[in-house]
Length: 260
Image 1 (cartoon, rainbow, N blue to C red):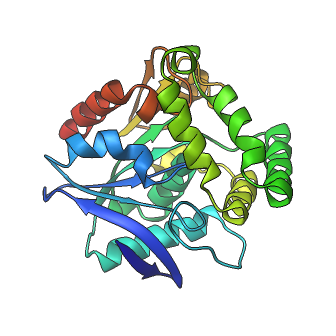
Image 2: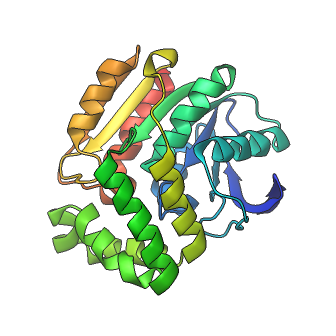
């Protein structure tokens, strides 16, 4: 389905009819289909909303610079249109930064946070790398970065035993609109850290033991920064956790959300 959100066409999907609602937010280079393995199971118990961020997947672009605050405004507008007041937010990678901004600025609408491959404010070298990547895709397209992202972002087990997962992620990346991806890189580079002490809802942090993008040490530090957080680490897993270890991610989500 598609709907106009803050002047931009957004691709979204709603499944299930549970009284509790989950909002799934994908990361940089992802789409709402990143969460397909989890949605299939969780829609049996919850109402599940997934969507493509502005500039990603099948959603439209816009002329202005992207930002975490802007993506939060889009999420709120979509929820308002769907007449949803409160949500459990499940987010990946760059989406975890959006989720953290959402929880700080809209605490009354946040039931819980699950941050998969969580990211905090990126250091200077990482910010420069994101800006350089934005320039690369503008000049050469997504094909120029897709293979290196797969190589650096996936576990050895995934690359060795599951080429179909590599192919899926590679296709997801190469299908992104280059300008939207570039602006997303720049928005992530510009993002600053929130005050984690302001987030009082339950938080689950899920990391991969071979995640080079967001090492599991980040999740452990965040677990101490949030007032009410738990961190778990998944084996033989890189940064694309929901596809590399779909069963483990789904099980962890289900157990946490039922309690939350």
